[in-house]
Image (cartoon, rainbow, N blue to C red):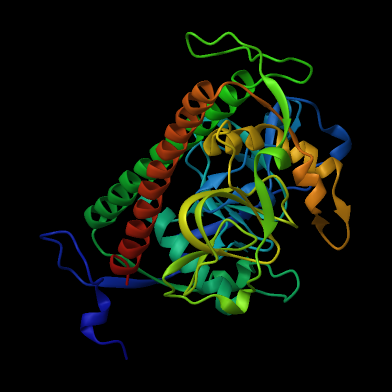
Length: 397
């Protein structure tokens, strides 16, 4: 038997002290599944179709959506979904340890729901924002315990109807909780928009502040610079080699950064280089992962270190040149094995256009400032997400 203290959440709004009540999911909500539309009737634009694969935790991926003719919104009105409707991915309902649940954004307006996705239908008058966060918690627990199938798990809506939930007796408390989490979600969305906007800005400047193929001057330059850029080989202006450490050398609380073949930086108790360097993986996601570091560090045996920059070559400028053009070069010259792999000559023979060192420094510092802005917003975003998870744990029974 549940003790009285377990009938209320750990953290509550002031003045709200009634115990919560237990309800079966099926007494509060229903799940209406989507329809198997005929793919031969898809069109280039029209009524968006939301399927289970487009639903992620807290958002709907609007890229690569399929569409039906506009008149189909009336023809299939039983499967219509509107902004703020709550939708679930019923097939493989958890991705990246998060439930596939989202509220339909306003930009989708009227949409249609595809099979293997479900819409939450309200049977009782429960606050919608409270419901969204309640179900994000509770259906996640349900999936872990009750999801049917092993290779392709799915939510059985029949079994879900008997799943028991705890909700506040007072509608006022539901509304306060819903509004609180809606505010957090809005703050999270704002930080994500700032990140996306800054990344788009960086991409646009990368396209304009480095010469296009066949040219020797960029479209956009800082005032006072007019000279043509010169073509060089990276190996002539730097020293390039791989490390001699392996993953087993990683220590969780190590003193020095340990660069491995991913974005994640591990730790080591030794350093094998001290200075400025660009570090890239020698296999896997070629041309997508870059680290720029100044100081003492260790690095993996399949990580390339680019260091000892010539006095006429700036490290940060080199980094952003590689951001712009190295991936195309790497993939063109990769060694195909189980994963894409780079050999040393591919990097040493990489060609880059180089302006004066003064112009390089201005360009490098400019893009570094954009990256710093992105990092600040990403840190704020991570903090907000962690705050939300902590409150989800404390504000529901």
